[in-house]
Image (cartoon, rainbow, N blue to C red; front, top):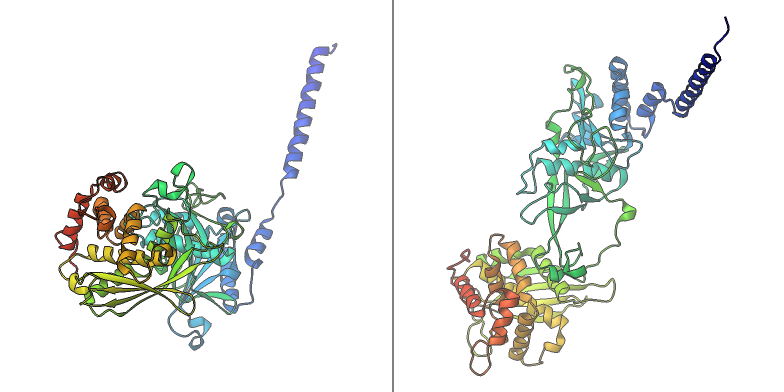
Length: 538
């Protein structure tokens, strides 16, 4: 039978296609590195090791568990490899030297990092007591399962997130974190912008990092722009400038509670406990803290570390306050108001006015202030009438500007805390102007100097700065009422010298700048002064 040429040609073409694709498939398979399970287990147990005896006992226990259940391979596929050398250890309260290794009650947190990542995604939690050893896992994305009241800062979700930030610090040295999830570290100030771990309370002992306390002082910053024009951004936009648009708050976060929350997928163990050997949280779960499921790398979900090399140059604030001296205050209610304002309140007001008034220093330098308070129930002005406060300035030997504020508690007893706080902020502004605007000072004429200051405050929007500080102290205060308190005491700036009547031009300025006419502002301030509005002073 004669062969069909067309059929023969098609057969040859088909065989060639199979051969080419087989070679291609072979090449593809050869191009993928083959990882032996023995190599994975060796890397798991032998990389990032120390000579610590306790670490050796833990790894010996885990090796025996792996022989039974082969948990290492799926664990590495999900969360990467352990960093034994960065293990954080929670000791029981008794002294370590008083116990043998076999009678120790301890909890170990072993950070896990994927090869392709630069952050800790999970921790193996190993508990050891007299009769049992168990372990389980915690992954960063699980913060979404914890309580998180967006109206308060210190709850389980934030504590859990701070714990993983601390592990990032231990392994990689990160101290700054960009907050992606707007529900984390949120309060009435708004959503957090970043987190800075201030001073991690960990010490090194026997080549293991031992947690003295599971707490960390944390500085939270918010992007806050109540008056966009103050931000000096492009077109007046709020552009995260570290000047007027940033608020700071220091909070202590603790995370010991997560030890008692239980693990993911059961617990592995020996002795009296036991159960199945656990796996890390499975794939396909909630979106992770960096915007990924537990099985994949990536960045940007709940928070993300800011690498050390990406940190901006250290910010040197143009001014700061080094001390608040209340030793001259005996009135307990006045002490309470000053304590509520505190160092943070003083610093915030000084920085706010420095930035809003463009008070600058030579690059990298900083002006230091101290606030010294005294009380004088017989305080009077140049006209012989009682006044609530007077301010002077002196320079200390180290160059610190000492703002000396004398307060008259006899004028506060029937007033509100809001009004007294506004008086204090008003006097702080006098001190700042004595330092920054010496051209307004008339030597030997306190009255004229005070008038010059009041005109400056009114015309340069200082009542808005006082408003912001009052809202930090009294979050529920109305904006217009806070501004009115900031305008109180500035009569010389808006009244005609001859008649004492309110100047029409100044009143128009008040309406456009402070959103109220001057008579309304005076009425509101008087009601706070008489405690008809606000919180009673005492």
